[in-house]
Length: 88
Image 1 (cartoon, rainbow, N blue to C red):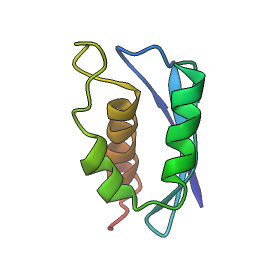
Image 2 (tube, rainbow, N blue to C red):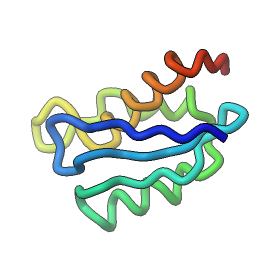
Image 3 (cartoon, rainbow, N blue to C red):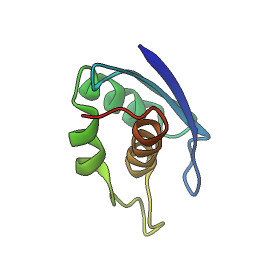
């Protein structure tokens, strides 16, 4: 299992940490942000396919910011997949 931390931009959360194993997401947790929402995201995504999640969450907007915690997670997953040369 490979662990990642993505420093977010344009949202209340400061960062999002997650693990990827065999193309699946694990242990998604945000630092900051709306505690109930970010905890729910982590629970909902446990064991989810990383690439599908990235595509699903990309472009999600929070209050006209042009991004959201979910969108930032999608960007983090994309970066992790690219850097880790993970083919899914």
